[in-house]
Length: 35
Image (cartoon, rainbow, N blue to C red; front, side):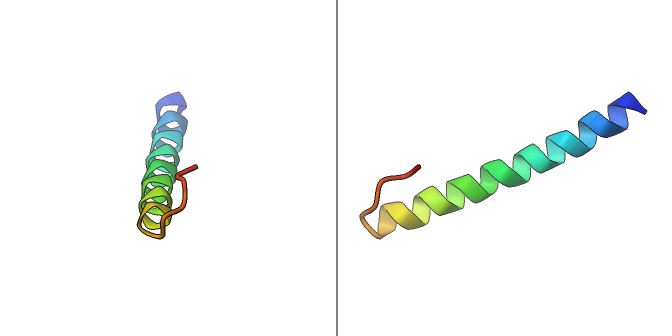
């Protein structure tokens, strides 16, 4: 049961990292500073 929770948290973390990478890439292309 614990591993399932950790797995879900890991998936959420990866999604968040991907979103941050996309956001920083977009703002970088627009000349803005990545957060």
